[in-house]
Image 1: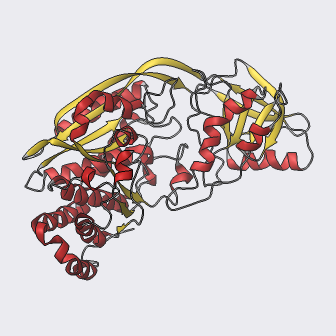
Image 2: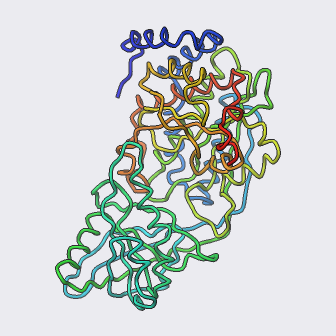
Image 3: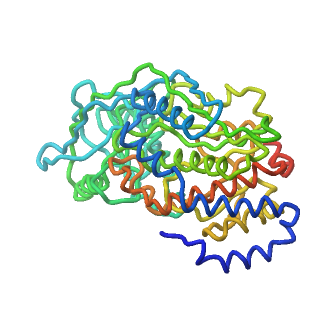
Length: 476
């Protein structure tokens, strides 16, 4: 999609005039936000950053040398773009390597299957060969009698993910990936397989993390590519006994991950921090272009656009490239997001607001603000600046942020969301198809423009989003 500011000028003017009374108190900041928006739309560093990141380092599994090398490079990149106080903060991590994997139906109907081991699943210690028992939901697996899966492979096929613009079809299925191996182990199974969590029908499985139970992942777990899941399910429906042979050399190891942090210091209130977050790590099958090289590109480019606008904002803009967002851990330390929160300590009280870009590179279509800010003078000003590039106010407030800024939200920091069109995101997510060519440069630039304009309005204002929260929201 190509957006033209000139083509939308008439609509922008109409909305600006309608919102003028709410914006009169800060007309100069609103005008500058529009200027920053247009400049970022026409030229920014986002595509350069994600191109270099994915080409130089490829996949960046959490804790791997590729992630560590990419973090060091990104710190240098930030310094070269004028960021200040750039630093790398390490934290301990249990890493995971996929190794080699294979799967096949054996017996009377032999055929190869395309699978991907689930993140942090243990290897098979040789070969596992067993009969498959199919369930249509995690609840059905949990309801199986104790010991009924002894020596068997548990298979959950809950059907294809529903394609939704906001990605809401993902949650109901990803819980199967997280809890499935533990549920299968509790019933005596020797392995766990599932239909991979994606909205596509490609023979390209989606990996993703599974969950530790009492400090271990109890069973080898695999995602079946959608066409292969269909095959296994059809055979079972035809009355066939399906036996599958599985092999995986996956293993965990002790390592470190890191957050990369850089600031655009505020002009008059530098102690007040706005956090723009994304994550550096990716899964190992693709090159992590949409998940989440694009997010780092968007937030870095937005901050850079503000810094180049000719006037630094009052508040500090902090870009954090979080480490280890993708993987579960034996503890509940929050990975990169938790490490950042522990590092800032009491200074979290001076964190004004946080936003996260972790939903690919397709266009932003809606703005969600913290509770109490919806419908405010600030919201009307933001709407007037974002409408010309196709971004409308969301009717729902932003409450939680994403995995990286979730710990900040839990500590009381308000969060915002620039909601992206996720209609095709889960076709690519966690697959070998997550590569640079899937990024539309025009839509990437629209993201940068939206982030730059909104963050300028926040950073050069004295809006207190914490004070805007309703009493019940503030209590949480």
